[in-house]
Amino acid sequence: MMIQKKSWAGTLTKKYGRYWYKFKSNKISLVGLGVIVFVAVIAIFAPWITPYPTSAGLYVNFSQQKLPPSLAHPFGTDEFGRDLLTRVAFGFRYSLTLVAVVLSISVAPGVVLGLIAGYYVNRWFSAVIMRIADVFVAVPPLLLALSVASVLTPSAINAMMAVSLAWWPWYTRLVYSIASSLRNEDYVKAAELVGASPTHIMFKEIFPNALGSILTKVTLDAGWVILIGAALSYVGLGAQAPTPDLGTMISEGSQYLPASWWISIFPACAIVAVILGFNLLGDGVNDMFSSSIK
Image (cartoon, rainbow, N blue to C red; front, side, top):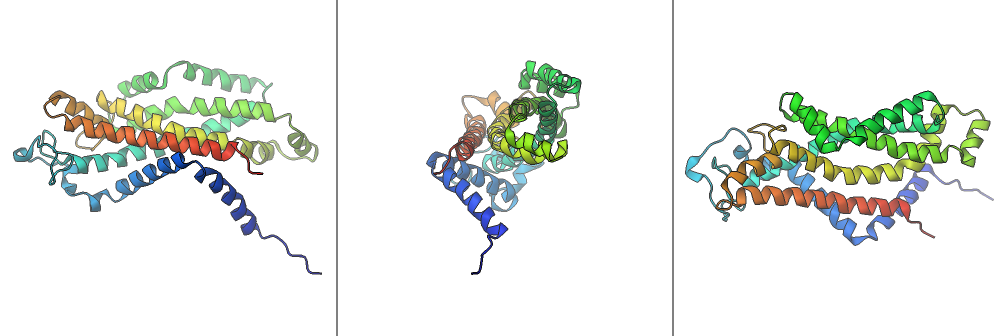
Protein backbone atom coordinates (compact mmCIF):
# COMPACT_ATOMS: atom_id res chain seq x y z
CA MET A 1 0.00 0.00 0.00
CA MET A 2 1.36 3.41 -0.94
CA ILE A 3 1.07 6.13 1.71
CA GLN A 4 0.56 9.57 0.30
CA LYS A 5 2.15 12.38 2.24
CA LYS A 6 0.40 15.69 2.50
CA SER A 7 2.38 18.44 0.87
CA TRP A 8 3.31 21.53 2.86
CA ALA A 9 1.84 23.75 0.15
CA GLY A 10 -1.45 21.85 0.23
CA THR A 11 -1.74 22.15 3.99
CA LEU A 12 -0.96 25.87 3.84
CA THR A 13 -3.50 26.43 1.07
CA LYS A 14 -6.20 24.60 3.03
CA LYS A 15 -5.43 26.57 6.20
CA TYR A 16 -5.60 29.98 4.56
CA GLY A 17 -8.57 28.86 2.49
CA ARG A 18 -10.48 28.39 5.75
CA TYR A 19 -9.48 31.88 6.86
CA TRP A 20 -10.71 33.37 3.58
CA TYR A 21 -13.98 31.44 3.88
CA LYS A 22 -14.55 32.95 7.31
CA PHE A 23 -13.67 36.43 6.09
CA LYS A 24 -15.87 36.44 2.99
CA SER A 25 -18.86 35.18 4.97
CA ASN A 26 -19.03 38.70 6.41
CA LYS A 27 -20.30 40.73 3.44
CA ILE A 28 -19.73 44.08 5.15
CA SER A 29 -16.05 43.22 5.58
CA LEU A 30 -15.80 42.57 1.86
CA VAL A 31 -17.07 46.10 1.31
CA GLY A 32 -14.32 47.40 3.59
CA LEU A 33 -11.71 45.37 1.71
CA GLY A 34 -13.05 46.70 -1.59
CA VAL A 35 -12.82 50.30 -0.37
CA ILE A 36 -9.21 49.87 0.78
CA VAL A 37 -8.17 48.12 -2.45
CA PHE A 38 -9.89 50.85 -4.48
CA VAL A 39 -8.13 53.61 -2.52
CA ALA A 40 -4.78 51.82 -2.79
CA VAL A 41 -5.12 51.48 -6.57
CA ILE A 42 -5.98 55.18 -6.88
CA ALA A 43 -3.00 56.13 -4.71
CA ILE A 44 -0.54 53.95 -6.63
CA PHE A 45 -1.67 54.98 -10.12
CA ALA A 46 -2.58 58.59 -9.30
CA PRO A 47 -0.01 60.13 -11.71
CA TRP A 48 -1.56 58.22 -14.63
CA ILE A 49 -5.28 58.17 -13.88
CA THR A 50 -5.90 61.65 -12.49
CA PRO A 51 -7.11 64.31 -14.97
CA TYR A 52 -4.67 67.06 -13.93
CA PRO A 53 -1.53 65.53 -12.34
CA THR A 54 0.24 68.91 -12.34
CA SER A 55 -2.24 70.04 -9.66
CA ALA A 56 -0.45 67.79 -7.19
CA GLY A 57 2.67 69.98 -7.21
CA LEU A 58 3.62 73.62 -7.52
CA TYR A 59 0.82 74.77 -9.78
CA VAL A 60 -1.23 77.97 -9.83
CA ASN A 61 -4.02 78.97 -12.21
CA PHE A 62 -6.01 81.83 -10.75
CA SER A 63 -8.33 81.89 -13.75
CA GLN A 64 -9.67 78.52 -12.54
CA GLN A 65 -9.77 79.21 -8.79
CA LYS A 66 -12.70 78.05 -6.65
CA LEU A 67 -14.70 76.57 -9.50
CA PRO A 68 -17.67 74.46 -8.31
CA PRO A 69 -17.91 70.75 -9.20
CA SER A 70 -18.42 70.16 -12.91
CA LEU A 71 -17.67 67.61 -15.63
CA ALA A 72 -14.24 69.19 -16.15
CA HIS A 73 -13.51 69.23 -12.41
CA PRO A 74 -15.77 66.67 -10.61
CA PHE A 75 -14.59 67.86 -7.17
CA GLY A 76 -14.16 71.49 -8.18
CA THR A 77 -10.97 73.51 -7.79
CA ASP A 78 -9.28 75.15 -4.80
CA GLU A 79 -8.20 78.72 -4.15
CA PHE A 80 -5.16 78.28 -6.40
CA GLY A 81 -7.07 76.78 -9.30
CA ARG A 82 -5.85 73.23 -8.63
CA ASP A 83 -8.09 70.28 -9.42
CA LEU A 84 -9.39 68.81 -6.14
CA LEU A 85 -10.05 65.32 -7.52
CA THR A 86 -6.38 65.06 -8.44
CA ARG A 87 -5.22 66.36 -5.07
CA VAL A 88 -7.52 63.97 -3.18
CA ALA A 89 -6.12 61.04 -5.17
CA PHE A 90 -2.57 62.11 -4.34
CA GLY A 91 -3.69 62.76 -0.75
CA PHE A 92 -4.53 59.05 -0.48
CA ARG A 93 -0.85 58.40 -1.18
CA TYR A 94 0.26 60.39 1.85
CA SER A 95 -2.40 58.85 4.10
CA LEU A 96 -1.52 55.26 3.17
CA THR A 97 2.20 56.01 3.43
CA LEU A 98 1.58 57.40 6.90
CA VAL A 99 -0.22 54.19 7.89
CA ALA A 100 2.54 51.98 6.48
CA VAL A 101 5.38 53.90 8.13
CA VAL A 102 3.74 54.39 11.53
CA LEU A 103 2.56 50.81 11.92
CA SER A 104 5.79 49.28 10.58
CA ILE A 105 7.75 51.33 13.11
CA SER A 106 5.47 50.84 16.11
CA VAL A 107 4.09 47.30 15.75
CA ALA A 108 7.38 45.36 15.69
CA PRO A 109 8.99 46.86 18.83
CA GLY A 110 5.65 46.89 20.63
CA VAL A 111 5.08 43.18 19.94
CA VAL A 112 8.64 42.18 20.89
CA LEU A 113 8.54 44.15 24.15
CA GLY A 114 5.12 42.71 24.95
CA LEU A 115 6.36 39.15 24.39
CA ILE A 116 9.40 39.71 26.60
CA ALA A 117 7.40 41.37 29.37
CA GLY A 118 4.63 38.76 29.21
CA TYR A 119 6.89 35.70 29.19
CA TYR A 120 9.18 37.03 31.93
CA VAL A 121 6.25 38.46 33.84
CA ASN A 122 7.90 38.21 37.28
CA ARG A 123 11.24 39.75 36.29
CA TRP A 124 12.26 43.32 37.04
CA PHE A 125 12.69 44.30 33.39
CA SER A 126 9.12 43.19 32.69
CA ALA A 127 7.91 45.69 35.27
CA VAL A 128 10.13 48.41 33.77
CA ILE A 129 8.80 47.80 30.24
CA MET A 130 5.18 47.90 31.35
CA ARG A 131 5.59 50.99 33.53
CA ILE A 132 7.15 52.88 30.62
CA ALA A 133 4.30 51.72 28.39
CA ASP A 134 1.79 52.86 31.02
CA VAL A 135 3.31 56.35 31.01
CA PHE A 136 2.83 56.64 27.25
CA VAL A 137 -0.66 55.14 27.34
CA ALA A 138 -1.71 57.62 30.03
CA VAL A 139 -1.32 60.43 27.49
CA PRO A 140 -3.91 60.46 24.66
CA PRO A 141 -2.21 59.59 21.33
CA LEU A 142 -3.38 62.80 19.63
CA LEU A 143 -2.10 64.98 22.47
CA LEU A 144 1.24 63.16 22.54
CA ALA A 145 1.62 63.39 18.76
CA LEU A 146 0.77 67.11 18.84
CA SER A 147 3.31 67.70 21.61
CA VAL A 148 6.11 65.89 19.79
CA ALA A 149 5.30 67.37 16.38
CA SER A 150 5.19 70.91 17.82
CA VAL A 151 8.77 70.53 19.09
CA LEU A 152 10.04 69.29 15.70
CA THR A 153 10.11 71.14 12.41
CA PRO A 154 6.71 70.67 10.73
CA SER A 155 7.10 68.08 7.96
CA ALA A 156 5.62 64.81 6.76
CA ILE A 157 8.54 62.78 8.16
CA ASN A 158 8.38 64.39 11.60
CA ALA A 159 4.62 63.89 11.70
CA MET A 160 5.13 60.18 11.05
CA MET A 161 7.74 59.98 13.80
CA ALA A 162 5.43 61.77 16.24
CA VAL A 163 2.52 59.42 15.58
CA SER A 164 4.81 56.36 15.78
CA LEU A 165 6.03 57.43 19.21
CA ALA A 166 2.45 57.45 20.46
CA TRP A 167 1.50 54.05 19.08
CA TRP A 168 3.94 51.29 20.20
CA PRO A 169 2.76 51.05 23.87
CA TRP A 170 -0.69 49.84 22.81
CA TYR A 171 0.82 46.81 21.10
CA THR A 172 3.06 46.18 24.08
CA ARG A 173 0.07 46.09 26.42
CA LEU A 174 -1.97 43.90 24.06
CA VAL A 175 0.75 41.29 23.55
CA TYR A 176 1.73 41.41 27.23
CA SER A 177 -1.79 40.45 28.30
CA ILE A 178 -1.87 37.57 25.80
CA ALA A 179 1.66 36.31 26.55
CA SER A 180 1.23 36.44 30.32
CA SER A 181 -1.97 34.38 30.07
CA LEU A 182 -0.44 31.80 27.69
CA ARG A 183 2.91 31.28 29.43
CA ASN A 184 1.41 28.65 31.75
CA GLU A 185 -0.37 26.69 29.03
CA ASP A 186 0.52 23.01 28.61
CA TYR A 187 2.13 23.40 25.20
CA VAL A 188 4.43 26.15 26.54
CA LYS A 189 5.44 24.01 29.52
CA ALA A 190 6.02 21.06 27.18
CA ALA A 191 8.32 23.18 25.03
CA GLU A 192 10.25 24.23 28.13
CA LEU A 193 10.61 20.61 29.24
CA VAL A 194 12.13 19.53 25.93
CA GLY A 195 14.70 22.33 26.18
CA ALA A 196 13.27 24.92 23.79
CA SER A 197 14.90 28.32 24.08
CA PRO A 198 12.91 31.33 25.38
CA THR A 199 13.18 32.89 21.92
CA HIS A 200 11.63 29.79 20.35
CA ILE A 201 8.83 29.72 22.90
CA MET A 202 8.02 33.41 22.50
CA PHE A 203 8.06 33.52 18.70
CA LYS A 204 7.04 29.97 17.77
CA GLU A 205 4.61 29.04 20.53
CA ILE A 206 3.10 32.24 21.94
CA PHE A 207 3.30 34.70 19.03
CA PRO A 208 1.18 32.64 16.57
CA ASN A 209 -1.64 32.59 19.13
CA ALA A 210 -1.47 36.38 19.43
CA LEU A 211 -1.30 37.02 15.69
CA GLY A 212 -5.06 37.27 15.19
CA SER A 213 -5.44 39.95 17.85
CA ILE A 214 -2.43 41.84 16.49
CA LEU A 215 -3.72 41.86 12.90
CA THR A 216 -7.16 42.94 14.05
CA LYS A 217 -5.68 45.86 15.96
CA VAL A 218 -3.45 46.81 13.01
CA THR A 219 -6.41 47.13 10.65
CA LEU A 220 -8.47 49.09 13.18
CA ASP A 221 -5.52 51.33 14.09
CA ALA A 222 -4.93 52.24 10.45
CA GLY A 223 -8.01 54.44 10.52
CA TRP A 224 -6.92 56.13 13.74
CA VAL A 225 -3.45 56.81 12.31
CA ILE A 226 -5.00 58.52 9.29
CA LEU A 227 -7.27 60.56 11.55
CA ILE A 228 -4.43 61.72 13.81
CA GLY A 229 -2.22 62.45 10.80
CA ALA A 230 -5.02 64.58 9.34
CA ALA A 231 -5.37 66.40 12.67
CA LEU A 232 -1.64 67.21 12.69
CA SER A 233 -1.86 68.53 9.12
CA TYR A 234 -4.99 70.52 9.97
CA VAL A 235 -3.08 72.55 12.59
CA GLY A 236 -0.03 72.91 10.34
CA LEU A 237 2.21 70.29 11.97
CA GLY A 238 2.02 67.64 9.25
CA ALA A 239 2.80 67.63 5.54
CA GLN A 240 3.63 71.08 4.22
CA ALA A 241 2.53 72.75 0.99
CA PRO A 242 2.44 71.91 -1.84
CA THR A 243 2.24 68.24 -0.70
CA PRO A 244 -1.36 67.06 -1.27
CA ASP A 245 -2.65 66.07 2.15
CA LEU A 246 -6.29 65.59 3.08
CA GLY A 247 -5.98 67.30 6.47
CA THR A 248 -4.23 70.31 4.97
CA MET A 249 -6.90 70.58 2.26
CA ILE A 250 -9.64 70.62 4.89
CA SER A 251 -7.80 73.30 6.85
CA GLU A 252 -7.24 75.51 3.81
CA GLY A 253 -10.80 75.04 2.56
CA SER A 254 -12.37 75.92 5.92
CA GLN A 255 -11.52 79.56 5.25
CA TYR A 256 -13.95 79.62 2.33
CA LEU A 257 -16.95 77.95 3.96
CA PRO A 258 -19.83 77.92 3.22
CA ALA A 259 -19.51 79.55 -0.21
CA SER A 260 -16.80 77.23 -1.57
CA TRP A 261 -17.89 74.19 0.45
CA TRP A 262 -16.36 71.63 -1.93
CA ILE A 263 -12.79 72.59 -1.02
CA SER A 264 -13.24 71.08 2.46
CA ILE A 265 -16.12 68.65 2.01
CA PHE A 266 -14.58 66.32 -0.58
CA PRO A 267 -11.26 65.78 1.30
CA ALA A 268 -13.27 65.23 4.49
CA CYS A 269 -15.46 62.63 2.75
CA ALA A 270 -12.29 60.94 1.47
CA ILE A 271 -10.98 60.61 5.04
CA VAL A 272 -14.32 59.22 6.23
CA ALA A 273 -14.35 56.66 3.40
CA VAL A 274 -10.83 55.39 4.15
CA ILE A 275 -11.41 55.18 7.91
CA LEU A 276 -14.73 53.38 7.38
CA GLY A 277 -13.02 50.94 5.00
CA PHE A 278 -10.33 50.07 7.53
CA ASN A 279 -12.86 49.67 10.33
CA LEU A 280 -15.02 47.31 8.28
CA LEU A 281 -11.92 45.39 7.25
CA GLY A 282 -10.88 45.14 10.91
CA ASP A 283 -14.24 43.64 11.84
CA GLY A 284 -13.76 41.00 9.17
CA VAL A 285 -10.25 40.17 10.34
CA ASN A 286 -11.53 39.84 13.90
CA ASP A 287 -14.29 37.45 12.80
CA MET A 288 -11.81 35.52 10.68
CA PHE A 289 -9.58 34.69 13.65
CA SER A 290 -12.20 34.44 16.40
CA SER A 291 -14.79 32.21 14.75
CA SER A 292 -14.26 28.56 14.05
CA ILE A 293 -15.42 26.17 11.36
CA LYS A 294 -16.72 22.78 12.38
